[in-house]
Amino acid sequence: MQPRHFLTLDDCTPEELLGILRRASELRRLHADGAVHTPLTGRVLGMIFEKSSTRTRVSFEAGMAQLGGSALFLSPRDTQLGRGEPIEDTARVISRMVDAVMIRTSSHDTVTRFADHSRVPVINGLTDDAHPCQLLADLQTYFEHRGDIRGRTVAWLGDGNNMCLSYMRAARLFDFRLRIAAPEGYAPDPSLVDGDRISLTTDPAAAVTGADLVVTDVWASMGFEAEQQERIAAFRPYQVDAGLMAQAAEDALFMHCLPAHRGEEVTAEVLEGAQSVVWDEAENRLHAQKALLELLLLKE
Image (cartoon, rainbow, N blue to C red; front, side, top):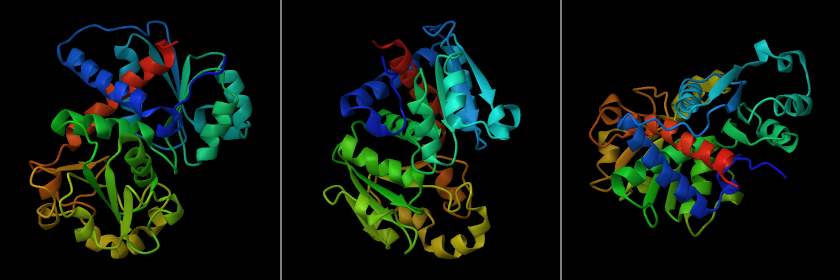
């Protein structure tokens, strides 16, 4: 029997995704109440990090501990991956020893090749093409603060990066409108745009006007640090400040997957302001991933 993987949001149906969000909120309440919930006792998650991380590592490691299991941190420096062992061979070996694998890397092909040769579920902790676990946390946060996102409008400001691409998938699966504002040369591939739900613009005000959720990310993602100054110049008009947020819906929320560069993609006033839910969003990585782990490891 083939294992169930989570490489993009498309690996789940809309109904399954909604179930993950509901379960994540339940797990958040259980955690806040101090309840002991250990359905993954004896289970082990292998975590392969080819890109550095704070939230991904802490949330998966803490999540497995809270569910009664354990997690192993693996980096290229500490494994044969760093000495050129093929990813397919690593997958065959590691998946015989653990119950699930999470991978955070650059190339999406690395995750798919690993999954193709794994005996156990593989979770995408981040690639250059997708960041599905972060989208689970974002959507959980919106549902907890504002209810169903169906029919709402989300404004994405900035780079057409993995987060932007994941929001594009989410727009189709959760049936919301997505307006993407990006400078020329930095927008996602127009061929990926679903015209019924997704629109592209170079005008940040046009994207934000009346939006229910405003989202941004750093202007130079990991791997693009050499372009930092060039990107600052290109993205400066896309900074989320109080003036821009004022054009969104009155009860609009602001999200950022973090880490944030105050004074670049977002001002400190907005990041620390009343409309910002970034700290709940960050915490919900823990709860959403626990719900995902339950789905992958406990469901028949």
